[in-house]
Image 1: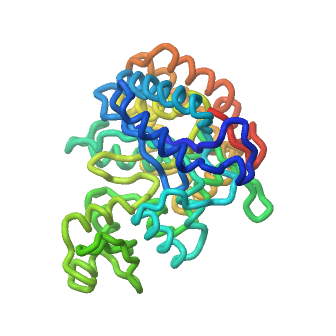
Image 2: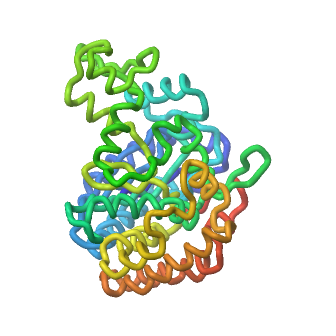
Image 3: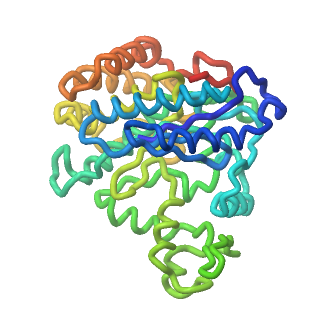
Length: 383
């Protein structure tokens, strides 16, 4: 899993004065943490100075939870020692500022200015819980690739609503997941959901070939340049680019595709907002049990099948806007949570993590609420 955190100065306000030197402090924190994490997680920086903790692949939910919890405790202790606070929220209410001047981030910023929207806010002001699961095998059952792809996509809007944690105002109306509304509105061809398909491998290949290339890296000096016009990967492969395509170009292009469910050899779930405190463990446990426990997976597949409760781009956006105030989403979310709670003891999870899921269910999901409903728009919970 990948845990992203907004970072602030301990006790600081929301003004720029409280953020003076923040980039250097966060960079120092990342370097110190990288050498001290017993679970061997990776620590990296996002364009706006968000901190990301990425665990190594684990063979079980319990192992993943233990590694993440141990390394996060170390990271938090180091942050406290430097006077920093990790905030668990999906959207920063402060003006976006590009703090990490990596050439690729600069190119992304330039690209998003070309396509309009609020690309800089997407790069610099968002944080998520990203959960990575096996893509599956060739079988037709719950382990099968096609069903796992369909299941995570049909569950995506439900997860988005359940874990909405970035309340904000959009055109005078409060939405529960401002982060997801922002993502879905910024370059929809790159960040929007894909249509249902019985052949996800072909679907993903077609999506990758037909999506515009963000930037081309110079082979001479390594600089990234945003190409003029609509250069898709397909057109580049057919000779329409500034130079022949290399394997590294394809890898960079695939990394730029940020659909809610991304195919990376595994499946990466990107629709879940960052959570406050230790509630990051809740979406991790829920996703794991619904994908990797046979009974739970079969139960949720019978519940939803191939027909999403919120289908198409409009449905995904509605889920981001309404959260569980949508009665249909709330009803499905309650059933999904009951299935997860029943299956978690079979999958094996530390007792504190199971307690966290039960508390979260009682406080939010079973009441038809998400964390966004307990916070004013524009606020962020402290981790």
